[in-house]
Length: 203
Picture (cartoon, helix red, strand yellow):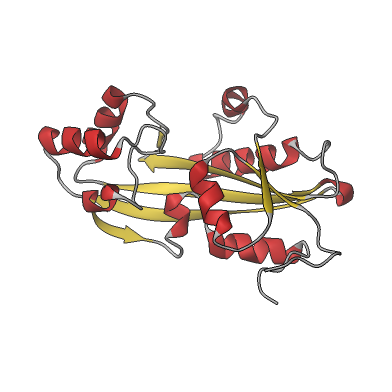
């Protein structure tokens, strides 16, 4: 889609290739920039909140962090937190942590909270939503877990799996409204939010 001259610039406050690839599906000209945010410090500030509220706060903080430098742009922020009975499932970063997370989830149901926020600094307007999916994982042996981690290398994924790749084989059931949320951003919600800020995906 060719944006109109009056349409604001859209910025994705993320360097995640998963989110970049998802937003690219919408056919919009989107600039990807790293959020100007100390994410670990921000997480500590909101550690008292429920995990879905933490995801929402972080998505908003990422979007707003670029507002001063880009006041006329419509800025997208997103965050994702896995939730196993109230315990956060973040990015494992190491093989050992990935295997440990998958062992803890095997045979159980966890939730995945994916938040998306849109911010427009010139009008100081921000809107955000949280999409929550329930995922039931198969009972898995240690050998199956090790095999999966070696083949899919999900070290930069919340929950230690890539459902868009081999990770889908880990699950018995996925319940939710928009599967793209599990991958990284709920595109149905993104389209809805962008429209509220004057950015249309379709003519």
